Image 1 (tube, rainbow, N blue to C red):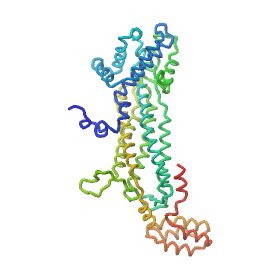
Image 2: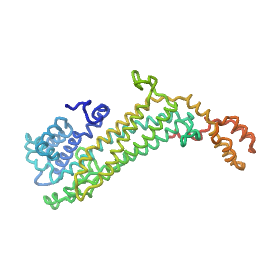
Image 3: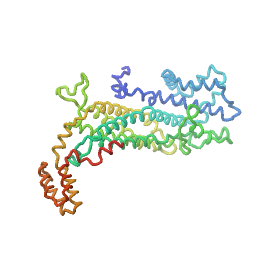
Image 4: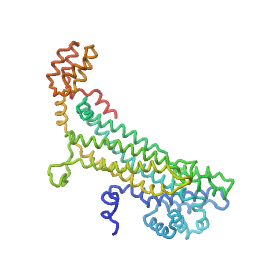
Length: 459
């Protein structure tokens, strides 16, 4: 069966393929090969500038050509490497041979071809490539998607900053808030999580088979290979890799930074799961309506249905993303002795984990764009919950030393349907200053929102 969107095993490459077009070139196997070529070329050019008599500095034309191999890397190039791999049965060696094949028509490069992959172990190329993949995915897909979500939520928080809403704690009516303040809570949490994702340093090592520069020093014992490797790793692209140097490793980079990054993404996702469930609930209560899409069907048998499918889709995919991200963060920092291969197959699923997250962010964006506030439903809910004013009344009573304030309000309100008249009768009977009585008598559930509106506008 030929691979098509409808025959793909994963929905990321099937049903949802078009939504992940930005991530696929970065996190696919082709993206991985692309970064491997980038690392090999970067190392090769750096070696030519190291001052070795055996490898003179490359000409400007050779440098331009090499960087062009990276810049113009195509699907056909990736396919050519895969063809070589059929013989080598080793993917990194296949990249090395492909690069050398590109030297055939250029005598200057052909003469220096043995410096391709010089003194490197496969993991010197792989770990740096993974870091470059994650760097690109973070900068081009994840952070922009989170930024768009944060800005949309912030816009809603400001728009609805002063719209009163009944709170519910333990599922029961509680002190009123505003719609904007509840959204602002999410904005602040998500912005913090976003900064933690952005702040993770992406590490890379280039120190040989077990992290000790053994082969490097065998070739040039007096050369400062550690300083050289650091320069390659930390210098800006395209002549460096623009990453953070990892000085200590076994054969593989320890992957602790990956665990930190994946945990940070998972925390952001958990915040969004929380919001998806709250939004779903507010839609169920009627606080939000959803804009209709022409031709869309909510149920195969119930024509009236307008389901919160985008929030449900986002929640489900955030859960899938987090299941994978947490496995990655728990497994990757563990390796038997100086190396085992369990990390390699797991790392090939980084794109799957990030794909489910990106898919969720897209669905959430669609859901947020459909929301319309139903202020009538919000008002009706507040008007049916006068019991929430028991809190301000008993607090003012306590201010003025009225004995048993809490207990008196509990007797009037707990487990009962409370009418305004019940509270007003109690207020008029209180031994408190007359202006305070008037202030409490004028209070309604919709007016009892504290600093909610101010806090919402500040996010």
